[in-house]
Length: 215
Image 1 (cartoon, rainbow, N blue to C red):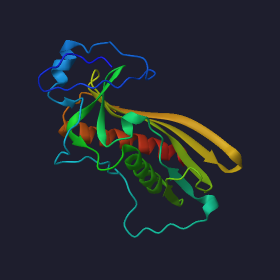
Image 2 (cartoon, rainbow, N blue to C red; image 1 turned 90 degrees about the vertical axis):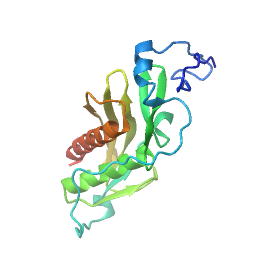
Image 3 (cartoon, helix red, strand yellow; image 1 turned 180 degrees about the vertical axis):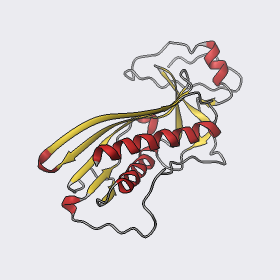
């Protein structure tokens, strides 16, 4: 794979979005590279002192007891992700062909698992149905919420965080419904102290939308 010229403080690794045998030759605009060079890493980094997580904006009070049958339960499954979101790094979309990672920021857990927990808590807080979390695709339950987490990261060109989720609701009688949800927070600097809270706000926005849709 062809590498861009070395630049001080920046080790670049291109992650192609085309087939693996296709080589990318597009170069990042110089102004964007200069703006990101102090905030974005394209290679390995040490675990930072501060880790990011997703915390629910609304949750059930302590001591709340919910009972029900498996037929009436909502089972929230881990969303699928691509390789960008399969690690504990905070993804930065540089352009259509390049992905980097935010310096001094890592998730405490895989983004898909954090987002699943946030979805489940939002659904619990939104109603009185029994909600359980499961990692298995074969999990039972009256209603299953699966899907694909398309984005949970930072858009460098737009200077915004983006959370995008394709939900799949499987109900009784083989009833299936799909819907795409998205939330953005604009005017965010590419720094961990700004990206972290913005991602948490956007993820909670999407979780609330999904909870309203599930009912």
